[in-house]
Length: 303
Image (tube, rainbow, N blue to C red; front, side, top):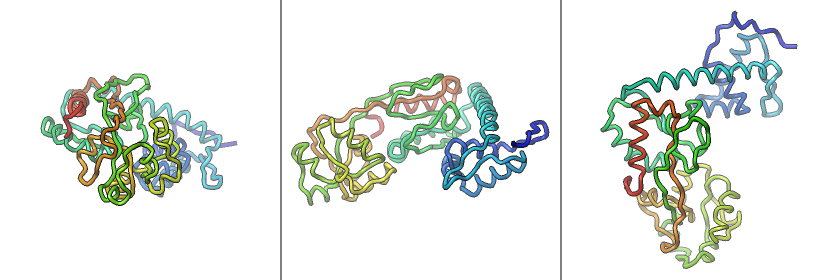
């Protein structure tokens, strides 16, 4: 049996609570540290301090994993309620602000963050020089409702409730490679010849195979001998001659040292969605950045 928690006697440190919540949801101190952008020892110390303040054990270590104790699972329910309330307070306060200053967090893929957003941010800074822009470069989908970002740029339509979403563009993509690589292996004339060449992997290889197969590119796992979870790293590997990958034509236009492969082939097409919380959309600074992103991400405006 765990000790009964005297809630009135406890002065919560919200940083400790956030570390506990992230660890419970991510399953380890290291994963929680990545989400919180802190070090693993810091997260571990904060959870240990919370355990000491409460006088209970929150996690049991099983191999390399952390499992919630009964007391930890009970606390997690309350902490999630606290986080939801805190997020609602933050959303309400932000939505009332009419000042074009303060922080706006934008989340996008690492490739878009590195190549496409900088020229757009220059224009936003001219329009609103007192804004503080924080780019969350992430290839997973961040939660706007939990204020992991204020505005999200996504390639799938957001389905969460209470979000304002806008389809701003339909982008195109082709196969690209370095001229030095194509000089070495030859320039393919059709999908069959293309499938025999080296591909640079990005993310899950089986997912990439599933994407290419319906397009007539019959590749296997052996086709992907080098790759990365990072889109930026994968694209740099392509630029340095390791093989071929599919890339947005907008990004390729901003990248020296790459050549379109099968240039006459029909392009891949994918949507670009902007999303923000419906309450945040009423805040002047969020609306300004949202509208600027929508205008600049429209076809042909970022080159």
